[in-house]
Length: 399
Ligand SMILES: *Cc1c(COP(=O)(O)O)cnc(C)c1O
Image 1 (tube, rainbow, N blue to C red):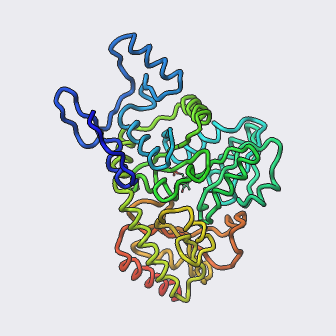
Image 2: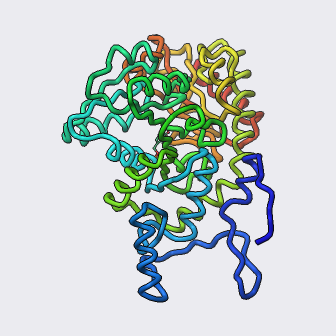
Image 3: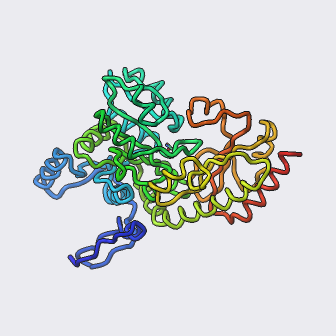
């Protein structure tokens, strides 16, 4: 083996992890790991199989069957470990499946879970339909140590949060939440889809488990569904590993390959999304129709100080309060030409979504207002074109 220096910058690491190994006979290799599609694995001898089984029993990443995936999956897991500073990563068929895997690994019947009131909406559906039926109790709460302390129960085991929160991008104080979790023996789980490991690293800030929807910025091209769960603590890794196996999750090697391909450009895409979003914020701040803008990289955002302390960058997401009544706000959204109306985010394209402010009633961070709220994902189009589009749509809304 030749000695290669360990890169210290994530940008470098992301170009060099998960590249294909040299063929020992030819000394040659493709740059990209191919999509290794297989449903099972063959062994040269029973002794080789025995050795693999023994490693599996120790909780190592050993493949004896196709479900967990071979080279392509392993390369992507390594990328997620690099991104999040984790020891192990587990892949799931969607971000939501990664959340389900995490919670089923960590809570038992009779346990209580504290959940930030700003989490991704479908988490409440998981709670209402599956977790409650299994006898798992959940309390939604503003995710500050003071507010959470009032909701603690002797059976509380997990604190599940998302920072910045869905819809309003409320920055949470992860180090303070980690101290709170430690003091009360809770496992702190964070949904880090916003940061995707590149601009925000919750495990470094004290979280025990980080969950990422790779569907968003990791994939980056709006063409795949993927989730990942990352952890360091060996006991937690073991529990997640056991549950992952039990649930039979499997993702296609082609999807793992697409995510590996996408992640190479994560650094440059993320910087562009963030820079474009800031320009759009500045433009919107100058418009009379625009009220508060929710984007933690903006100096006026209440979460800005925490963002500046804990994050190394930002992305293309923002929520914008429009000083318009609901019909006018609908005209605005419908009039946009370069922003598609759609859920999700993190791809190359700009998206707009009208936020149902009734849903926000359960978010303690929301300042109740009669105004409309829209969520924008600023894509990789020229921000100059996006500003022209936004201006014409604001004009159409007033008409
Ligand atoms: C989209 C999203 C998810 C779910 O990811 P899917 O791959 O769509 O299931 C989870 N958390 C957050 C914050 C998201 O934005």
